[in-house]
Image 1 (cartoon, helix red, strand yellow):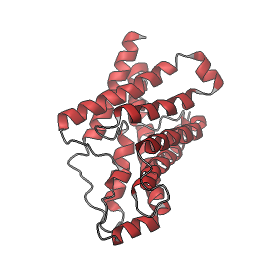
Image 2 (cartoon, rainbow, N blue to C red):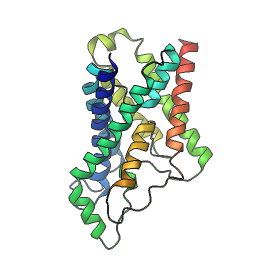
Image 3 (tube, rainbow, N blue to C red):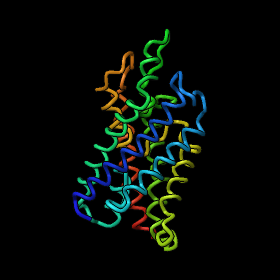
Image 4 (cartoon, rainbow, N blue to C red):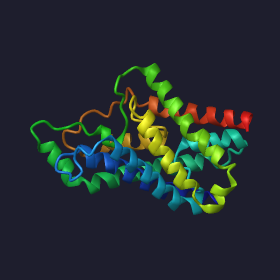
Length: 241
């Protein structure tokens, strides 16, 4: 895969992922949305379908990593670091693009939210926040949840039938749904540095009235935690398999 194909594939795939993922959160939390208050299960499946659509779209160009933690885990396992910067650059650009597309899609709802008597903070549509703010616990949660994502992804590569049938991405999508349902409660399961950091930057820059804080004091946890989890997954996989 050329650097150009990798970059373009990751931009497109990650943009789709974030459009679906941030979009389902916007649908559930913003007033005047037809999906208002649909709940956590809907959010978990929305993110899973975002992985499904984004990864299948990107796969012919880049393999569909869509996540620096996945890219890092693969690099640690294989020792091939040549295209890691290209993958991560594409993922960051794609994540920011997807966040902008989500804002445009729900533009009327964002404006209506700002005009409400008690405007709701909007950061949760774009990035994660902990249910209980405890940096050590939050970091550990993100590490564990990311190992729960990246280690199975590496192992799926050993299952010949998944690759031949083209269903590996479908299985990963359901894996993301499972992580959201089982491990998402403490921190909102970033499990992807680009997924959190790119939209957080966009949230800071977008002209959303009464948008609230972008919470940069917490922002390092959903970046560092998944990177540690991705690297650990590569080490564990290399040693065990």
